[in-house]
Image (cartoon, rainbow, N blue to C red; front, side, top):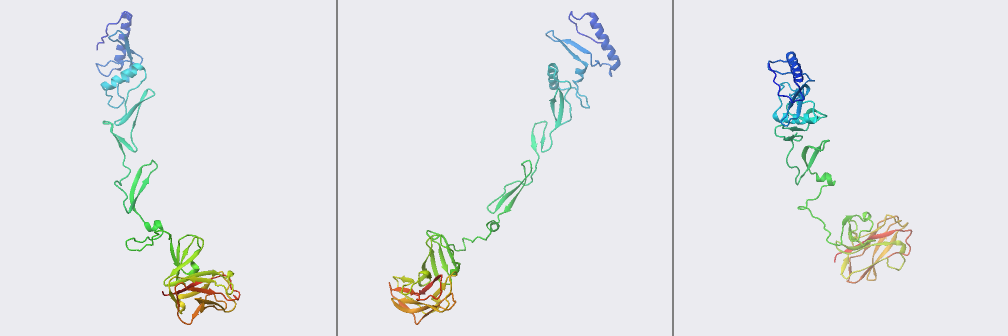
Length: 349
């Protein structure tokens, strides 16, 4: 083949050109693979002048970098050539981009490197679209009026599962709530924060003003005044009481009740019951308390020896006029009794 070189400026004489021609031809004869190939050794330069007369040159090593490093050894695209030329001029590149299909290429300390995006995302190299990998097959809306949403989260903070869990009200509350549509409720509409029922001995200590307690054994109703209990009524009519025996004295009424309503004290014990408090001491012998109506003795409240509950005796039913007093008098000798007596005197209106 013939090698044509452009006219050189005066600085290059014919001897220089002849020597270059000879070196190129010798390398060409030793290394070329095709008749039309021109081969430069890595240290040889190809010199030319641009339109401004400035000298430009390539070495065999740089020209080798203008070919892809993949198996096809394809020439760079025009855009890649332009990029390569710019980097070569700046002296920042010694090799050309290569890698495999789908790789992201980057300049790594003057040499191109590549990696393939993988793991939790995939990249479309044609459009630049990034697609996140699916980690949860449970999609949709979770939770409603009877269910709550339960989520599973991995170490990267991704929701990897979601389920709807039934709300277990009984387990959450620890009891089965009443059905408002089929059950009755006691509502505090003012002044009565709670209502309890039970035996007199189970009545709680006072301290909740307005609370009501229904004694099922004495058939009385008590109201908490904040520091003590006040008897307020019964299923019929009459009164409830609780008195400390430490203040008892002969001839002085231990209990004094007066009502503007006329009523009747029944002779049967079912409506009249009296007890000694749990912290009290029962009498050593029979001990009687007198029941007066309108200043007249009408009945007897009797504690047998060692007894903590009394029997009630009255010859017949006794009418109590409106505003008439009903009183209980202690005996002159309590026979060792201590504590409090409590109970109720009841009858129909």
